[in-house]
Image (cartoon, rainbow, N blue to C red; front, side):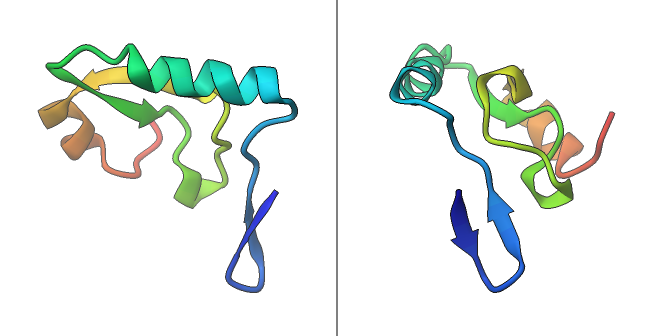
Length: 68
């Protein structure tokens, strides 16, 4: 876990394999898309592969940190 401030923590990866899978997900993002956290980090979501998705830039901006 990486500490952010005094109280919040972001879960990144349990293993190097998971971390590499997350990196690959970012690398494979289509040019017309962005990587989005399904459950936002600011709302307690994790930075894990199962919480990531590709969204068009405008849709990602509209979503912001909402949980849909």
